Length: 215
Image (spheres, rainbow, N blue to C red):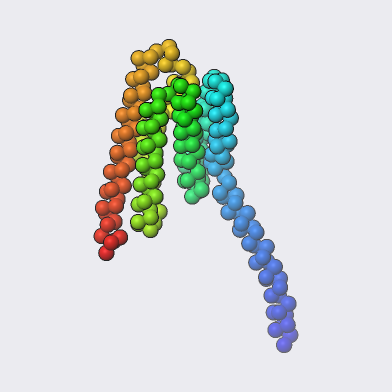
């Protein structure tokens, strides 16, 4: 009887320890998600409204500094995540979202301001819409999350789009129209090719899963 009573007295303390362990586990998970790479990505998201505000006021030099700072945080968060093995599922979604939001926002505002022609914005936006819509459709039919790995053409396309933004902020179109339009045409070509390549990869993946999906 004494042992049973002692056991009953210990149970509340065990329950208290378990209750205290839950918040600690939640704190550890929060700390893991809000690590340095994800913090840098959040900083990049915070720079977007500042960048757009400067663009709308045609303060191109200041906007260029903010854009370069955002690009530096983009390089840093990926490097830190790889070196310290700090990759998280949140970061896998947040990082490309921040990159794309910055780029598309810049293209939209700079097109409204007359820096970019409308056809360039159309190609960039249509390509992104096709990729996102195709990804969602494949995930829906497959019933699982598809791993996303940027292709070399995708990285080259992003590089050209970044170069367009920087060249636009430096007003290269007014000083060297020949180079400016060559850059715009090259960006369109690489953007279209990367969109076709991503679509091809999606169809290949779908073809490899089709027997399982419809069996």
